[in-house]
Image (cartoon, rainbow, N blue to C red; front, top):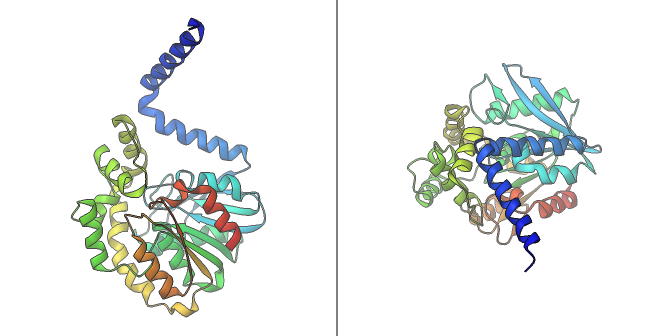
Length: 309
């Protein structure tokens, strides 16, 4: 066997190991910066809005056409949740993708609950002079989407991905905690160390993520440790928010579509079927997919959004 190809491969492996050793503690941050550069090269611009109640919302805008709002889930950011879809959807839409309050570079001085999140999003849209919007939200972003739908005059169409809206009972919470091996849901959604990050990822994704300690710890430091108490309050406040949004007449909601992974461990498929029947709307079920639908099936999510909106 020719020694040159072997030597070249050996050199590449040594270089890769050196880079991991040198930059391991910053690898997650480096990836986020690379994704940010990719979006900017695709025409996206980064914006920061000062909120009326204090605080700042960061959001991305790219493309032209019908405005389309993308809302990420718990623990994520606009880029970590929607990057691949953003790079496709900006060809046909004006895409607006915020970091929700207390995630990424956004925060609010308001009370950590669904109304504060929703009002912050409305302020972004008002700053862009957008009166009516198409919106897609996954998981926690789906709760915000449903809350926005209770102002139907401002919503064209909505897509709720892997989020049960108001139809999440106390028994559902207990079963979720039982599946995850925790006492309270905030213990699952707001991990406090690298092992708990792995536990969350194991419940979010269909395929297990192999994650070395330094990566899991960097994910914790970048995405979960900042504003940790505020994130915990967002989870606990959802119980009160659930009761409030359930009071809104379902027949007055704007047109919508639901998207679910068939293997969702966070909000199992029966939650989606129940919400579909309650809202009398279509439910698209994606096989071999967990809760992280936008990360696991970005091309299909893009097609579904295009076909519905």
